[in-house]
Image (cartoon, rainbow, N blue to C red; front, side, top):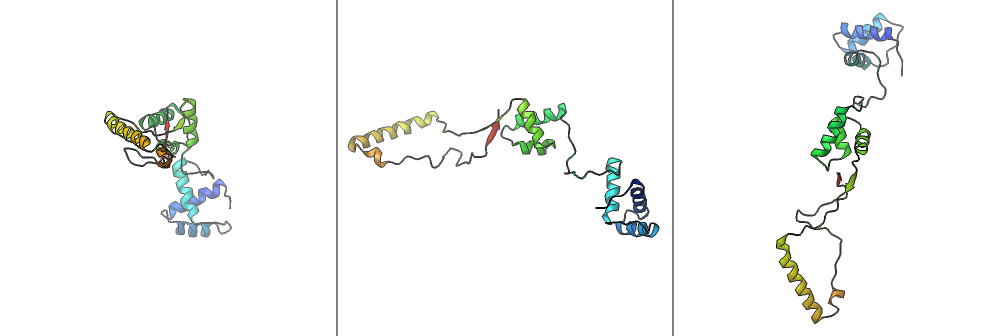
Length: 178
């Protein structure tokens, strides 16, 4: 990749302005005025103009990921904590996108506040209406054992599926911060 000094960049920016922000015309004008200089890409004129407009400098970052460099300010910390308070099941990546900071900062803030994710294990919640059917099942099961003592050896109880009142759910990736 070619490197240009500040004077060359200033000349490119000037030609871009003379060409009414037309890359192709700016390149033509630049080559005409500076025949010994080499331009690698006509889009360079637009990029230089955008960089100068946004940052006030021709210096560009090679590692720009589209996200502004963030500093761990009290406001950022509060935004992260508020996001977790509002939605305890939110992922660090979702908080990162919402607050516009790297997720590593989200992790550090949560760790410093002694907030750690844990894996939710759903269990069946029993309500008073569940008591009668359970008692009925227990009486039936005891009657079967009385009639056939090895009845329980022929019954299959497994934990292969999880059934909940809300329907089947996959809690493999369900994490909540507390």
